[in-house]
Image (cartoon, rainbow over all chains, first blue to last red; front, side, top):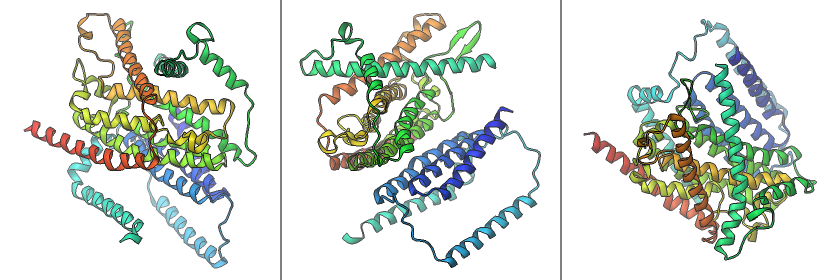
Length: 166
Length: 341
């Protein structure tokens, strides 16, 4: 019952901050609300007994990516709302696309037969030992390939950054 | 169950209180050490040996005028120092402060949260530690504060990498991410610093950079930036920023002692035949002595070395420490592999 309260609290926090990301006027507030949403999601991972995932989520998203976002927004000093108003047809297309995504999601979850909620404490998949075993035994090649992909992205970013000197 | 919850609440309050008191008196010790290094007395007016000085400073900070710039973002301006303080106090949860206490046959561990990913938890706190400074520096709406905040965040992001890489070697050797397990494996004189001297050195340097201490205190470099990220702060909000630096010092000392200097272990201490609770107390004092040593080291270096230039700082971080840390990881991996066969 106690975890239920935490679940509700985290869900409300996640949804509220996700809405506020869109609703806030200043870009920097949006970034901070997005960070808050990430923390709420990390809390959900802890409730699912996936502490490793939770902490990695905080390190990668809240700790690295959002700091860089914040950095960029601060340096560009987007203090005032300088976003130019978009033309009507862009808004229309965005509305249609977003609505289609929502319909698809609703369709998926309506068809999804929710089984009796199994106790997350029994499934130990989120613990670092089990996750590591699965990653390095069953999915070794995809895992290594994805690391190569990251390396490519990093090298590419450096190359783009040094464009003038080459 | 209820007893456990009460015990945990009590333990975490004691640890919070301890970190606050230690941080409070670190300010006095810092000034005393500075006085000693510069051949003068340091504060000695408030109470015997200046012992009441931190209280006087605290009272003064509370009664100072609360100043808020007109153009500041009000909410974020207050959030900045609060967040810094909050995050600084979070880390202590994962540190094992001593062996288990035993009262009436029930075991009470001297650790608030024995999570199986304790090391990663500390990483996570480290990586979000930059928010308080960035938010405060930006919300002040002052160019010096913003520059200080940007410096702080780029410095912390850069040194976080080398720091994590140097801890990975410890994790590789121990085979566990749990702080308790890491301490347990360093029993006696089996300290990690003996196997990982390079890793320890890298971690130490990065700890200086992460806590924004000299010689890496560029975010608040007075000669260039007035006061850095806290230029616009006054009263206890400034106090929170200054205070959290000392808490960070205390906690990073505790982390270093735990990861590299054997935590609460000391050779021969378990052969004395002490009863469990006395043993726990003595072990805690051992850990505390190690932390005090690190605290002194922080001050010693502050009053010895001049400040780095910003490009030197970045060069040191990216071009020396990270390659060295990667090399250290590779060497550790090879040695572990050879030992297995």
